[in-house]
Image: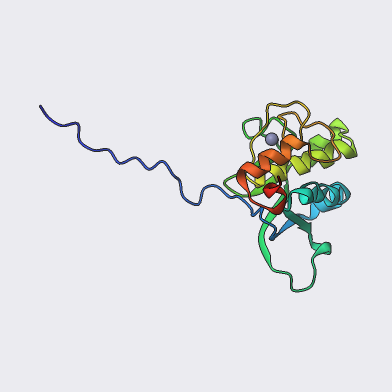
Length: 170
Ligand SMILES: [Zn+2]
């Protein structure tokens, strides 16, 4: 009987998944010109949702001179949404490490400031490597509620991926 032989299967596509540091090193959130013009206020608020965990997203104007930047998350204006990537109106493209923002569609739908802010913060959660949570009221819920801050479930999920002082609690 012939052996079936060996098939080498590579299950890890190295370099395919971009996950930004959530360990306290600074991650620069960089909107392109169009996203900055449309949503600089929402973006500036959204980066601070994750502060409570010890993850450190910052926009450029907040950087301290000479502060080392561990990674960048560009936010790029985009004309089309992607239901495949995320059932939301903005999405984190994992292979690129960028968040796509369909500005025209968001403006057409009249998405309000709080919803947009939570949406951007949610996409930054994906950039940290977090997946959706089953809870309906969590920033990382599949349909993002207009929260002003993370829930305990979001923080617990963060702590399954990253180790920061807040994750070492009692
Ligand atoms: Zn999502």
